[in-house]
Image (tube, rainbow, N blue to C red; front, side, top):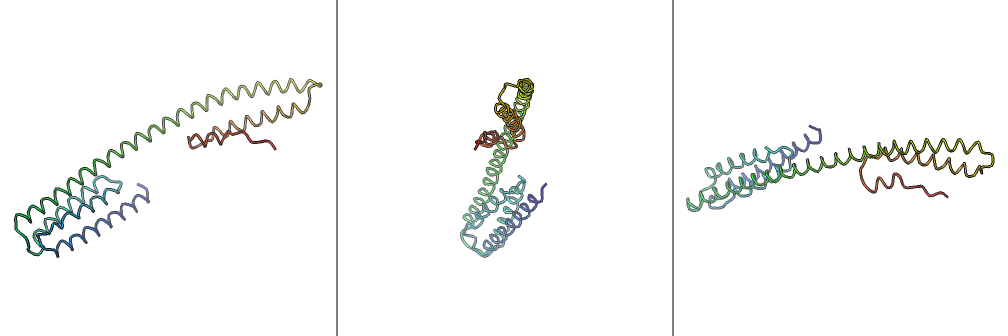
Length: 200
């Protein structure tokens, strides 16, 4: 686990504990007739941001206990059946939120894994293509180098053309090296790495 993840977990845990305490204090001071246990849903949703799945479930359990404690310790008020109904409704809302939110988080993580796998496969295909292309182009450059050596032995061949030939060989080798070092498989990045320089 990275230090950043530990910091995030600690920070989220502190926020959840703080929210739970605030909601409990409010619930503790409000008459039983008010459905003050429903705000605990906020705690569950905040806990959902943590990398661990069980944090939201853990706080759903804590919030459920707090909701039941509020039933016993809050100031009296309202009809008993309404009070029980409100507390039951709060517990239901907390656990439905925890279940659906956790399920959504797992589905998002599955999608992330699939996306990451696709990116890795795409990278493998790209690298395999680059290695194959590099082999072919290296053979071509070697053949051109052989031709250049033959041309150089011809006294009637213009030196200016030989210089241009050398520039083509140098640029081809350089572009192939740049292409093989591309780290991000992105259309714009790849194009930029091999885009011919404008001769001035």
